[in-house]
Every structure is written in structure tokens, then in C-alpha cells.
Image (cartoon, rainbow, N blue to C red; front, side):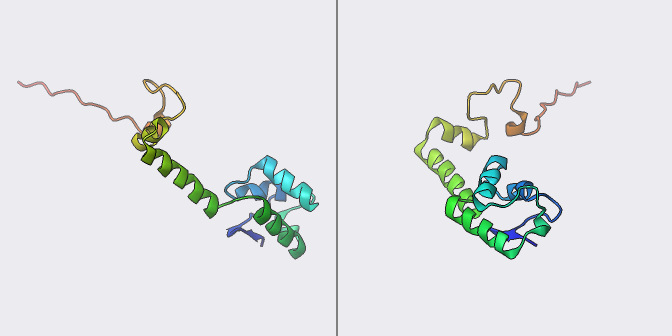
Length: 124
């Protein structure tokens, strides 16, 4: 089993796709890493040798921030925006979209499920 940066890569997948299970590595970054290490992108994760896995580990550690280090950097950036009181920080704080999207009708993903306002019951 291949374990890189504390994550177990899925056995049956191609290594090109398996690397994308790491937070901070997408498909294009995965392809670059495989090109530098000289590993065929079509090989399955379970077919990798220990030498291949160690070369992938060293290349990822040398080149990228992944998993915990990247997550902590992102959260610290968001905290900094909130503390400085910037527009983006206030939007983060209130749970609204940051980049100019409309909120009157859309933005359900960010705002959460609708909070329906009930009507008053008729008194007899």
C-alpha cells in the first residue's frame, strides 16, 4: 500500500489519479510530478515499487506544500483577512460569497438551506 504524506492512496487507481487524493495536488500537478520522477502515469498504485514511492515522496516534499501544512496556511490566511477587517474577511465571517456573486436569488451553497418565515395563524 502506498502511503504518501499520511494518506493511503487507493490501490486500484492509476497513480496519476491516485496522487490527486492528496490535498493540494490536482491532475496537472500530478502529471508534472510523474514526469519529473519518470514514473509511467498508467501504472496502478499497487504496482509501484518502494523505490518509486520514495521518489514520489521526496519530490512532493521538495516541491509542494500538501495536506496539513497547506490547510493551516489557508486557515491562517482567512484569519488574517478577518482580523484586518477587509471586505473579504467580513464576507468570510458572515458566510457569504466573496467574489462578487449575487446573493438575492442564488448562493444557496454558501448561505445554507432556506430559512422559511412562517405566516401568522388566523385568529377566530
